[in-house]
Amino acid sequence: MPAPEAPDRDGAAHQADGVAAWQDEQELFPAGRWREGADMEIKPQAAVIPKETGHLEQGKYGPVFPKTPACYGFTIVARVKPGRAEAIREHGKNLAEALERDPYLLAPLKLHYLRWVLFDDDTRFMYQGIFDTDFDKYTEDAVALFSKAGVSTAFENLEGFPEDWKTNPEAFVRFVREHHCPSFIEYGEYPFVTADEIKKALRIKSALSEMLDQLQ
Image (tube, rainbow, N blue to C red; front, side):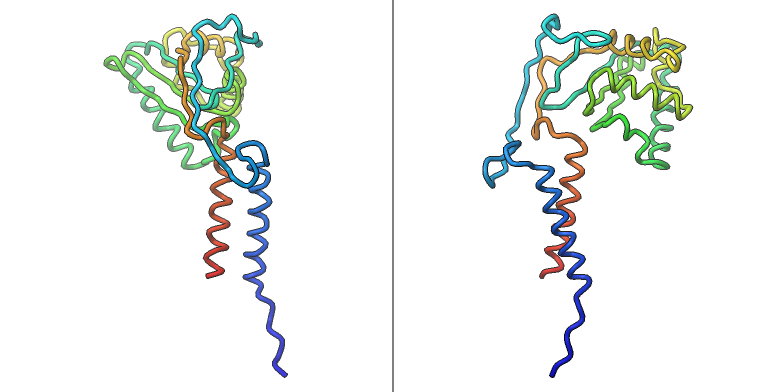
């Protein structure tokens, strides 16, 4: 009589991974959000943003800008203090190095992307961000994050930026709002999807791919 086979622990582990991945898929793509029945479909969308903001809900610091297919975001344009462009570039370098040491440094901001641009012969600075929290919460979270970490901000090199920003978040928010250049149209190839949902989908894809490789 042949001896009983030892349990395939690796196979069981990968099966468990597959079950966990399926459970994550159910959480990430609940029925009715992006699919009907078993067919998932993500349709690109665009949103036109009116120039006037009087119809918008008023928040703590002004109109509450709605979430668009490209999530939340802002574009800040301000004049650089004379001779401070290189200091802004150095801030960018320092931020990149800080993220190498701690890739999750900016996690509280729920960011998708950041883009810093110096233009007009380094006399103006543009800060573009796409994120998953609303406009004012992002700014308040940024003040709290940088203050707690003892980190300065590149904005200190911009004309009109409040020197007491670490203890006066309201002044920081006012500066951001005053220098924000609103979009008039925004487009999303995968509309309204958060960064956390994207990362979870990638983890699911990796887990399922590994499970399928083990079955071959």
